[in-house]
Amino acid sequence: MASIKDVARLAGVSPTTVSRVINHKGKTNKATEDRVWQAITKLNYQPNLLARSLRSQKSRLIGFLVIDIESPFFGRLVKYIEEAANRKGYNLILCNVGENPKKEKEYLEILIQRQVEGIIFSRVSDESVLFKTPQLSKIPYVVLDRNLEKEEAPTVKLDNFKAGMLAAQHFLELGHRNFACLSGPLKIQICRERLEGFVNALEKAGISWRDIIVLEGNFKMDGGKEGMKKILALPHHPTAIFCMNDLMALGALQAIREKGFSVPRDFSLIGVDNTILGEFSDPPLTTIAQSFDQMAKASITLLVKLIEGKKVRKKQIALQPQLVVRLSTTSRKAQ
Image (cartoon, rainbow, N blue to C red; front, top):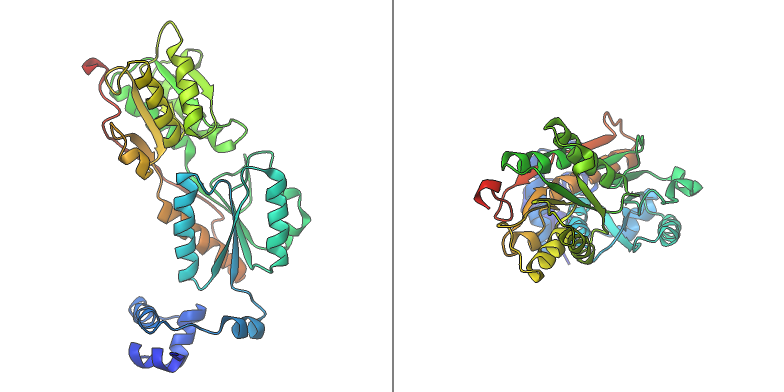
């Protein structure tokens, strides 16, 4: 079994430097850190985490409360959160709360009993009871993705207002004048923010909010499909449909096809998240992308600073969305 001296020898550094890199203490340059981690990987070096935690009285554990592990969004986010935590020397305990506020609270209590050093959570909705749990005040945490309005808690999220604006602006540039929005649950703040951005951009272009069809969905394919069926039952159809995630957009696409219509000939569709499902759909889905890697790194970096008691200049981080244009949107004149 490899020792810390073996790692130091292979990396060309001292055992003290290896220890600093593993424990993220002191300053080392990136080239040195890379050599150390490469040596650790090559030798399959396993630090004695139990002994280290007993000496330091630290568990090196981070809890992650996930809304729905089956969601392509959260499934991908888990991957990047785990990788970012690992690079900082922490292990992840994953809890799938299943959009259940009661289960959310129960898992929080379990994580605290397991003596995690910090928690990342994306709350179920505005109905979340996490902040009503006294134990939460005893441990560093970061809110990921789903924040509350005017929240002062440490938060990393997408600029959802801008995401809605980007969708509306793209439709307008393509010449569309009739719009619908298939939202996620409006009891979730990010859905209200996306809708507000979408409506705001359309109103600036002279479209009254009264003329915008808004149907509430559930962030799942069946919600998108059912919402689109309602739109198709209307006497006059909007031509531009903004769906608040890729799954609902794919559900809407299915409903459109079942009724003999086509995308983008009859309807232009935009989703949010830039998941692989949208990239390989037929046609490939135009979407508002958010960087999962950037979101994960920002969340872990912020949480580790809070754990280590370091000064944090900015506790609310809003990441910028990006429009990814594919084949599900086209000019209204070309339809």
